Amino acid sequence: MKSFRVGRLFGIPIELDLTFLLVLPLFAYVIGAQVGRWVGILNDVLGAGLDAGVLTATPAVSFGLGTVGALGLFLGVVLHELGHSLVARRYGVEISSIRLWIFGGIAQLAEMPEDWKKELYIALAGPAVSIALGGVSYAAFVALGGLGGTVGVALSFLLGYLALMNLALAGFNLLPGFPMDGGRVLRALLARDRPYARATQIAARVGQGFALLLGLFGLFGGGGLFLVAIAFFIYIGASSEAQQTMMRAAFEGVVVRDVMTPAEQVNTVARETSVADLVRRMFTERHTGYPVLENGRVVGLVTLEDAQSV
Ligand SMILES: [Zn+2]
Image (cartoon, rainbow, N blue to C red; front, top):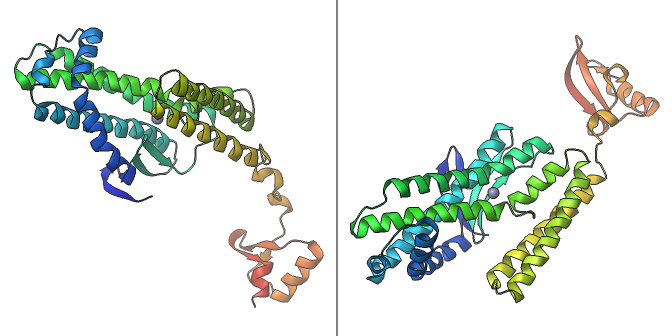
């Protein structure tokens, strides 16, 4: 899918997917159109005491708020992904980019380490950032409370809105289904005392069951089509994670150590060994590759293919 690189954070490229560029104005519009409703929620939940009349007086104000709110929301998503990325990088995992698309953000990790502790901390880092952002927004909301004028009320609104949305983002991401963070947390915890493949299978099942429930709620419980789309996305995510694991399970627990030739049994050749001798040894010793030694140090590797190319 076409995407645009907009900059770097901590050396990690930030990319905007085409689907994100379509969904951003939509979000700005939806938030702008719901300013009145959100004022009600903020007054109920946070005791904000905001005057909806000030914020919905003109479309310019409400849609301006919608635009800033949407940008703030997506900045929160980028920082959430950055949380995952920086912890992953500390564990030596390469991050090619952070990409924003229609369903939010993805940190593109080279590979998730199969070590339950690392996976757990990487998975928790995103929601932890979201919770921290929610807390900081709330603290600023409280500190600036009571500011008057359109700008003051608008600022209170945005801070309160971002406080709730970042907490909601953390909660949503902790739902126990792949590819949500909660699915990875679940797998990491399951992998403490069982093989990684088995843990993945169980976590994937839970994710699929959860996606099914979510889809049914979307269809029949009034959750709406967006929820059905998310349920579908989680179901596919869980299935593909389980499938990848089936393939890996064949080699589960098998490391190179188990199949390699130990150093003391390795047949080696010298740089001066003739290719004719090498080929003769390949046939008698049934090896197709030899380390090349000089003064006891490995200086190269020679294989049957190399010999054939002479
Ligand atoms: Zn996350």
